[in-house]
Image (cartoon, rainbow, N blue to C red):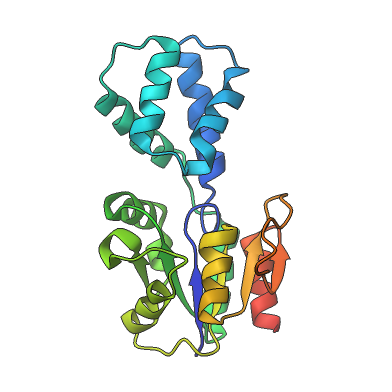
Length: 214
């Protein structure tokens, strides 16, 4: 029974799509032109920008008088409200489980936000457990977080696969711990010459199919 170590945002769930949907509605609500969505997506940097910094940028651009903390809450709750678990992804996870694989989420981020995503989308029904960097005290690509994930479900790392969309955090982490990996390229070219994924595919469903076939 090997481990399937899975990233959460933009791997198990489409965080990018949820943010885009929320962003378009938010901008319409403040009277901003639709073209400003490109600016918002750029500032967000695929979720890598700190929420407080993003809130301050939005306040400054549109002269909003609401406190930053209210915008931070809006960013959290608004994006979460538009986040769904694709039924096909749920089906793929069930197939992996039936085939003897043990899916475990390994995610960088704050416990409150990540656990809300896991529970409110129903991801928790399809994985054995999860490890979140804030609680673990270590983040991907540090190999220790993958070891902690294996310890959480009392299994060895041997024969595990890592699947994720981040070249550094997911694929770099897999390379550091000596595990095979599948990169969800999302239309991007591989950017790092220091290491490379075992496979590169467009979707999690294709990634799981590769792992099961291999």
